[in-house]
Length: 377
Image 1 (cartoon, rainbow, N blue to C red):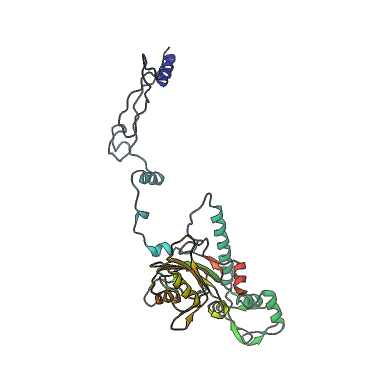
Image 2: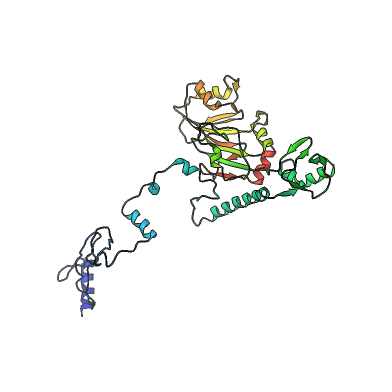
């Protein structure tokens, strides 16, 4: 029988005995061949045809599919993306790439993040951010709120403590002392506590990983890009940057509407620690490292450096430096005084806050634990 014969031939070809038998040949054509060899020795009753790759409309051939008017290949979006991968790598995004568009997509709430696996962790973080924003927006669009919540939103104290202040007669609304519990305050009302007017805005704290090319101001007369462009969707309230990073400096920066917290973190007496990753144009000598640690005299006085050291696993032109002073461009001027130029400057920590899990140009809202840690500084 022919079945037995073909099996004997295959065993003979494997054993190396080719006498009286033919070597086995793969019936399919190689990739790229238009016509492959016909399959011989088969008992199939169907007519064997050589394998042909369906190239669709790329080669312009209509031999097996009829004329173009009779049959056209149906292409979906999915197949188009597959063809682009197969027949050449497309340009980035298929259009011109603008860094402003890259960074000004807003928060992680509105943008996509690369997922690791099923993306459950990213969805959970996005949900938490969305819940915090919704909680803030609920207070914004209310016509009136309770007086104790009004006081708590101003950042003075908690609601329970605000109730005690109200009962003690320490709060005035439109010039009159209010001791009624549950009193509703309108947005247009003027509330005074301890002789000072307070605002009903709930404190919002946004941590941004600042990219290069943005300045740390709310407005710019020269129409340059600011950090406010990056956090446009972060809060319904107006935010202000805590401290400043120059245009070419990257890294952590905090934005908030809490004026008391801003004053606290920017004043040197509170010792808000800042850690920078500095990359120099040449290797830093051990002698210069010691001089910087002892203090370099600048125009304002001696620039006190809390700590400075080489970065483990990095070349000698990369150092980490910790300071608490807030002089303008102080780190760049320290190294310039010793003949070095700072090629890149990245702030990796500010007041205990790091840029961990925040992509460049993105932001997140601080957790309650992080806010409490800031208040305890």
